[in-house]
Length: 400
Image (cartoon, rainbow, N blue to C red):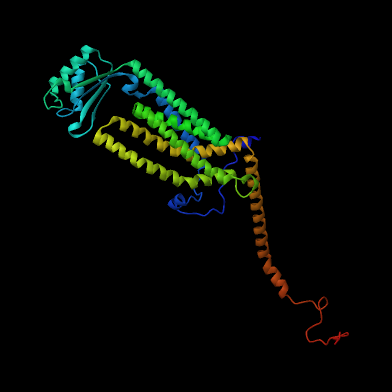
């Protein structure tokens, strides 16, 4: 195969007879007005930037592991009459170092202050509990001040390691099963594009968690597995449309594979956006309820990863997977030869139209000369008898 094909010189060519509509009309009707495949180099560069930033963040910053993964101590006391800054200051003055995290959880009378720290021994736990009680006098369920209102839970590093190992195994098993399903569900090139899109979602979602500093908890891992299922569903919808639009395209010379794939991406774009918006709305509601009303950290972690994953998944299924599929087709399959054939036919048709237009212009330019020649007096020697002359010769009589 020639280098021109290997370098993807056979790019998407927009049909000249495509109707022009407004932005929202094109988005709603899916008329193929957005050049998704035609701008594949831009989307490749954008996707590569996302992946590079994510990998650098993971390598440099790492992840903020929750206490279930990293182990440590969790201290909790009622939030009434206290603040996050005051509790953090008491912790610092008592133990001589800062806690890992301090946050207010919940609202109203059920609000609490939660501290996470490295694993504390029995002496440090008792010292901290007494210091917090003396500073804030928290009340127990009976309404009386009591040190028992301050709870301290210990999670060993061994337990955290076991949870981490089980989470990694679950993620690997899920990815392996997903890859097997994709390999069976799609043909070879679509499978490669879908699996690449799946890993793109994993890397970028993990990179955003690392970059922003979201805490990685078991709920976040569960949410990530859920998002991979959503990404798989979105890829199935988009690739089914691509397969439908490109069926038999190699036997025709009207459109290229890239143009039909671009049309499929446009036709499913509005559906993907609608699905994402419908999915995001309850997630935002879950975040509001979890953070501002209930203060349930598990719901917050679950909602955050779903919110990030759904947005990344919608982008990858349309703007990354489809262009990647076209690039693979044009590099390794008969699609490249078909694309050259279609473009050559269009080039020949364009040349013919240009020649016809030039001939018409030349005829129009010569028309006045011919008119002048037609109006010039005729020569008597070369023409017929003059007007008014008597006919000569025999007449052909009509036979009855």
